[in-house]
Length: 137
Image (cartoon, rainbow, N blue to C red; front, side):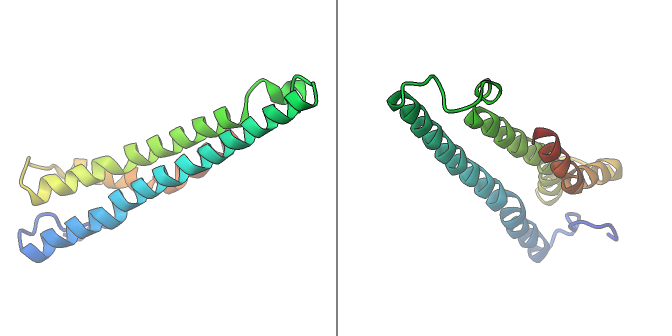
């Protein structure tokens, strides 16, 4: 195989173990790290928003924000960005993982076109991820 990807057609244990270890470090570990990080970021922003609301109550004002900023809370915006980022990452890399696992576990016959598209879609994540951040900010 001369493509930019893994050799899932080779049935030797070394090739199969490489894909299994590769999938852990390139798929599962980053996915859980992203979810873990965004969970605590959203949690910290929610705590900050709660403190801001409590401070506003102490000062007898409706909000410490301007009327424009008060329409959407920061935690809501951040939660949307986090959900979008995690979803895009998941949808980008899951077909690549499925193709590799189908290859090493001999689940289905894999067409070269499916391999190319899954690889292209996964690696295009580096292109559309900044676009999502740009649009959301």
